Image 1 (tube, rainbow, N blue to C red):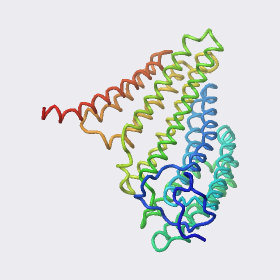
Image 2: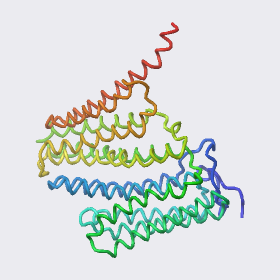
Image 3: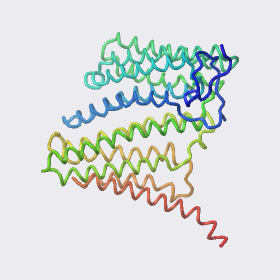
Image 4: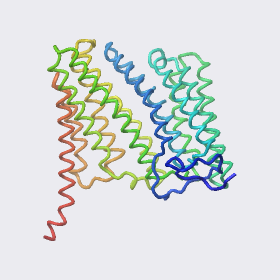
Length: 404
């Protein structure tokens, strides 16, 4: 058995059958996402698409309250499964055969979770979803135990606490399945708190060696996947416009507005070098947990575009204002959450800090523009980006003007 971990084996080097799993360096150069991680992310496309489809259906049937509640619950399960794997992989990805097999097992669990999304959303039946989590958790717990076996001291204790925490919380989810349906409301909230507390509990004396550049890239890639839901929705709008020429004048602006929103969201998110902010455990926790809102709203924009299309073609039992809000509210929420969690740490001065909140208010105001709500929201988002670029350019050019 080789004692040297095959760092970067997923990028063209031969896979070593078995290595000792030890922590990777936080300053490891050229650390990037591996093909295995990208494949893992693709499994979540199915789950997110399922959640988005159920949200669209709930809005189209005139039951937005149920749709939003179900979406928040289901998206938490999807997002947290991804978070669990991502932070572990950033610290302990050794890319040997057992590691790859364990990751593939976790992917199977993700697909089972995705299969359980409709039942969880429509009927509050979480049995299939919990089974999916159980599959993922068995593999991940074994990974943490393997990490503990390869470590010593505080690092070993942290790995063992992770394994114990995951086991206890997962047993809680299984036990909740045996209780009456009325217990799910409070039991779910209690177990969500327990889930979020596991990392703090495990790392209270030792921070795992996640890599700032790698984590920033992983979250960025997952954000792109969430925004991809809007691209797909805009494509559906164009297709529907071609099929139903009577609504062409309404659907094409929706498609165009949706594309502009996605371009603006991409620009807003990737405008700052966030790895420079991830310098402590506290920063990392707040930033990582805050992405629940960023990622959830990004995916919901796509669902909102589909709702707007359904309403424009008279297939949805909701008002134009409600359909518009299905787009403008998650867009504004994405802008605000990205500013609070992600971008404001790199803003200087009042003007720069007001750009994203001000843009979010304009997007919300566009929701009252009837059938022009989506294109106007796209215009507001584009103007937000333009103003941000202008202020950033002015700041960088100011010193040259001073010395000129």
